[in-house]
Amino acid sequence: MQRSGRTTGEAPGNRLDKGFSLFLMQCCNFCRIRCGSIAFSLFLGMQWTFTLDQLPETARQFWDQFADKQVFTLDGPMGAGKTTLVKALCAAKGVQDATASPTFSIINEYAYTDTQGKPRRIFHLDLYRLRDEADAISAGVEDTLYQDAICFVEWPDLVAHMLPPDTVHLRLEVQPDQKRVLREIASSSK
Image (cartoon, rainbow, N blue to C red):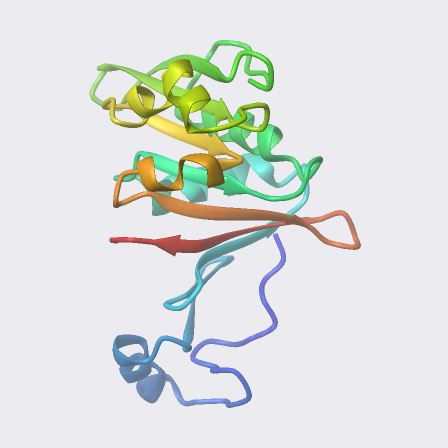
């Protein structure tokens, strides 16, 4: 995984000493810190840059960061690898089922066992084909979002107002070198 170009405590355009950067971490939305190979920005949230080979490790780091979160939106252009990302995130949780794009089924459900041995579920929603909110409700999207389960929502704009307040919003982008960048673009609470 490639690290962002900034060094520890470096704000846009400035190099800062470590003590001052710690102060800025608490009060400035534009400072950055490093945590292993993950870049964290109080303004942008988490960010990973990875290749397909690095995806399993990226998925592990993702769950280390978002262990307590359940609903995630996935924004990004068609072909960016959203379904491939969800497949890796499911694998990192121990899903044994074959994972596939829910483009036609709208909602796919996968089972796994959590660290306490409790059966859990992951839902993968692809809302690309839905026309309106009535379609979303009819498909069971709102009910799915409020179950005690992890949910990944592709093409979430149609149901933005239905999302739980602590939803984590993610963007997946393809770089010119074919690496992917996954960014947390918003989260209501951390």
